[in-house]
Length: 234
Image 1 (cartoon, one colour):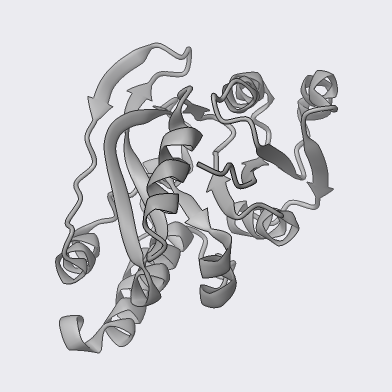
Image 2: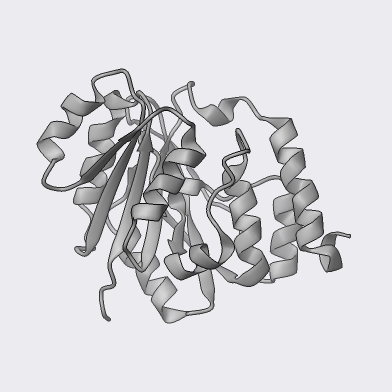
């Protein structure tokens, strides 16, 4: 199999205490052809000092604080890979994540993106439990189930850059649920793949943005989805 370049975008805001684990998990991937972009969204902690030993491995970009979606979009605009992964600065890739998802994506050119199952770890990195994400091969059923609640973990996703360029990036007007919105927009044009393998460690430390659900953003995404899929959700 050819090894296309893969860009890993890591948005971070005052997560210096977790950055080493995230970076080490990317640098230690079994897949060698990686580009790593760390987007510092205006951190005021010791992020720069933590990143210093990694200078030869990463492309570091600083920006004024604007939120996760804006940091992700800056990374997406600079990424050169055929595929793009998003890794939250407090999460961790397991060793074969990129290799296994690239193999899946390369085997099916109709896939615009894919996601995986994951394990949950605590603030200290101790495993709590496995989370086997649901998946529905029928796109209509997948869309309908997503409308009940987004079960796709963003850090488990790999996206085809050509699909992103066609669909558009994250909506920065959404304080939350910008990932939910993008998955639905990708599904309008592309198929979605899935690996029921634990390939990500999702860190739950009590300060996660997702701990407080933004119902206004979620409802806005659902209304958009009805317009995207009138034949299924109308």
